[in-house]
Amino acid sequence: MRSLTVWALAGTVLALSAGASAAQGRPDARTMTCGQARALVQQSGAVVLTTGRYTYDRYVASERHCAFAETIERAWIATRDTPSCFVGYVCVPERPLEDRWWWMRRH
Image 1 (cartoon, rainbow, N blue to C red):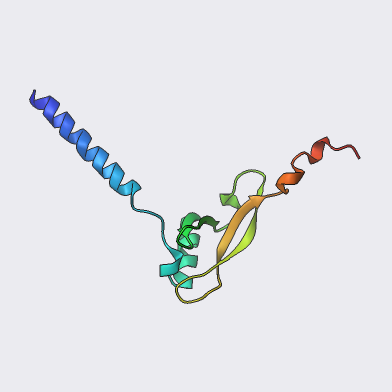
Image 2: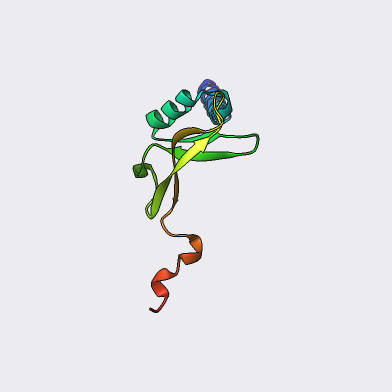
């Protein structure tokens, strides 16, 4: 009976710690300086930043953090000290979605 209690307690602690880490939220670019946001992207390689009350995006340091068939575009966001800060890049499809059947077209 005692070992069952220990296992139940251990399970509860594990569940609570996992829930707390999941509820931490993403970094908010509006509370960072431009340098802090840029450094976070460079150090992490890829990070999801909150950019507004209901907006967020994934910013990457280089193309190697993108999926296959994606390329990068420069990303500028508002931070605490500047309305337009270059933080890194966002991953975008290499071809527009409306052209995803390009290989089937006859020339």
